[in-house]
Image (cartoon, rainbow, N blue to C red; front, top):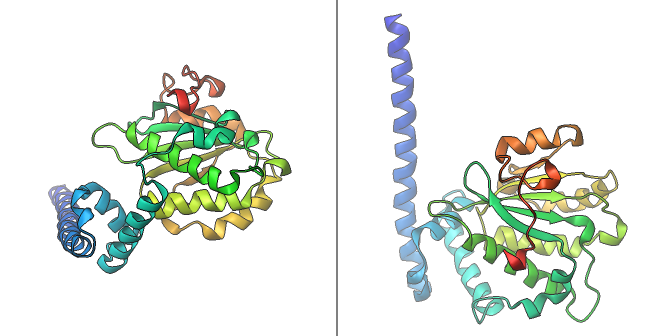
Length: 256
C-alpha cells in the first residue's frame, strides 16, 4: 500500500512539474514573440499578453510563425475595421434574417451563440460576400466583448434544421472559417452541430479540408435523440435556450 501511495504521489508531482515546465516555456516564448512583433509593428505594444498567447498557441508555440500570423492580423484589422467596429447599417441583409442569437453562459462561463443555418441565404445583392464577412466580424467582436474576466472562448450551437440547397453558401462558410481561424484564433471553445440533415454532409465534405486541426477538435455532431442531454453536459438548464429544453429565451445578436 505504501508503494502504491508513493507511486501516485510521484505521478502527481511529475504531472505538476510537466505543466509548470510547459507554462514556463510558453511564458518565455511569449516574451520573445512580443519583442519580435513590437520591433516590426510598434502598435503591438497596445496588445495584451492574452491575445499574443492565443496566436502563439495557434501556431504550436512556434515564435516565427506566430509572429508572422499576428502581424498579418494587425494589417487585416486596420484595413477591415478602420473605425474599430462594424455598423449595423453595414450588415442589414444578414441581420434581417434573424439567424444568429447570443445569450447565456455555459458551465465554463463561455458565452453561448446560437446560429440557424436554415435562415441563412447567400447575399446576391449589393453587399454580397463582403457584407456577410462584415456580419461575421460584427458577431465575433460582440461575443468577445461579452466574455467575463478570465475567459477567452465561446461556444456555438449551430442548428441546421430545415437547411437546404437555398441556404448553401460555400464561399460564405469558407470566408467565415478563414476569419475565425486567422483573426480570432483560440476563441472557439466548442461548436455543436444539431439537427443536421443528411443533405448538409455534401457541403461539409467541401468545407472540412479547410478546417485546421485545432478547430476540428472542437467540433461535434449531436444526435437528435440525445440533443437535450448532450447540451446539458455543457450548459445548465437555466442558460440553455427554451427550444432545446432549457429556460433561456433567444435574443437576436443586435439586441444582446
